[in-house]
Length: 146
Picture 1 (cartoon, rainbow, N blue to C red):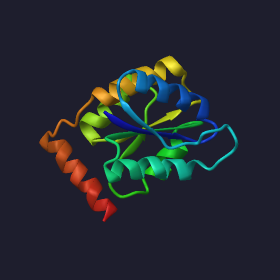
Picture 2: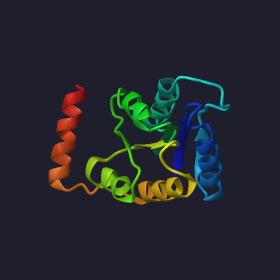
Picture 3: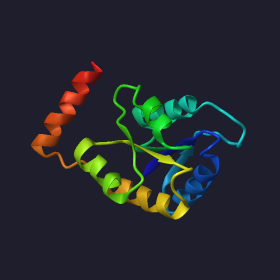
Picture 4: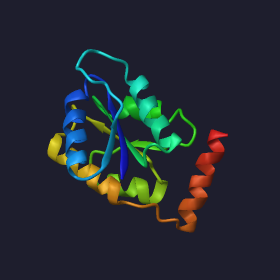
């Protein structure tokens, strides 16, 4: 799978680990920064990852900031992006199966490397169910974007 990754300074160390781990796992990784731990603004990197998903350069995106919340808010400003924070495995698969989430947001100050890896595997392996009730709800979300 083609995966765009990005982070702010708070998520830099975890993003670096995850980018390497994903590449070693056989995924094509597009690391969109940041590339140092110097302070930066998370909306810039959230937008870069989201745009890579929208452009088709990546199948899914992963953004890491301190809590995951700011990255999620910023990424969701781009029409067509459905970003959500997951810090448990149920959410990591349910958000894809029910809500067709295409960007996973993680909080580096909330979870560690092992849990982040598990969440990403769960997120990547999940697929949208296409059940009528979920398609109907997704259509309502798209209408809100219009």
